Image 1 (cartoon, rainbow, N blue to C red):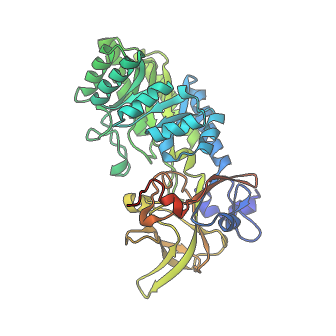
Image 2 (image 1 turned 90 degrees about the horizontal axis):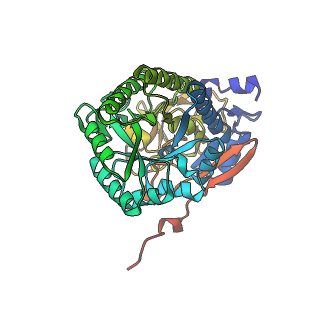
Image 3 (image 1 turned 135 degrees about the horizontal axis):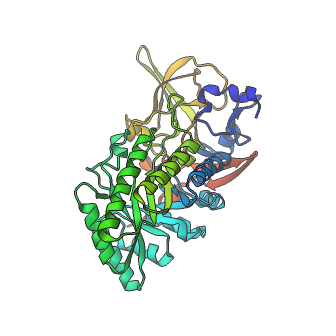
Length: 446
């Protein structure tokens, strides 16, 4: 792309896909495809993923971590967004997979994902899900509770296998993020707390259970985190614990993870650390802290999700009714909302937007972008400066690649949107738009 074209959307360049630019008609393009044409062909709401951005983020994490610590693996947290086509890309990029449900594991099975690089998380995995994981011979099960230790031990014993496990620990670290996204504090539903002695008790049980093979430890302090310090502190706390477990219980540390959760920029004011810097920091810090404690060189894995796909995705909507309340507010309603992006409603998430059909137009009025659903809280963006909107405009919301679709619903019996992926001017349909008949699949009549 030309420097002039990229500069024409410079205020949002940091949150748009890497290939985003503006063409001679003033239309937003992604991966060489006109966003307005995509909206016309597939309808709106439409989610557009840029393949180049996904592959670039994978390579940055993989190569930076490996350069600093060769015995490592990057695992994609599939809860951010998953689809068969995306998992095929991850396979090609030599990225592993973090799943949190039998459904996510099933998608991995369908695309023949390398099962030895699949890790299964979750605070209340069902017996059927654990059995599925054992039967598929996945790489590791990340155990999260005493109930799971007993259940998994019994299931593995019935199959005559030793289940490879990693214990999820709660290190008592408060990451600077939304309360709903904090997962490493003491008062959390996730993991075995170190400070209460429960983590050591979990180690004792795991070591004493013949059908369990304790490989190592994992911690995750939250998501959408911009600072590196929480990860550095997590590494030190968990490796201190690992050294104590070696000395007290003879546990050899063969794998270790400080989790994931690195943030992305949703607005130009957000300033996350570059992907390469994060990967390098983790690798270098782990190497130093392992050596300091004489813990050898276990495999290190990290679990980015949002930061691999978040910037790659753009949501497209069509503007409909516009309500102007004099001296109060201008509401511009679009044909999507909380059913395809609930993050503003539950997290207070802030987004930016631009017009895909008039990307160079100057801002002229303060508007609030409202969704179409029957909730007063269905507001995608409150108070944003945009060109004067007209019905039929195509509104583009960047940084929509993570969690929007994963948390989407059929609220108001809405149809879930189509999803496409673009590269070098070519478009592939990742997921077709739902039909009304799809809404009734599984329903029965009297």
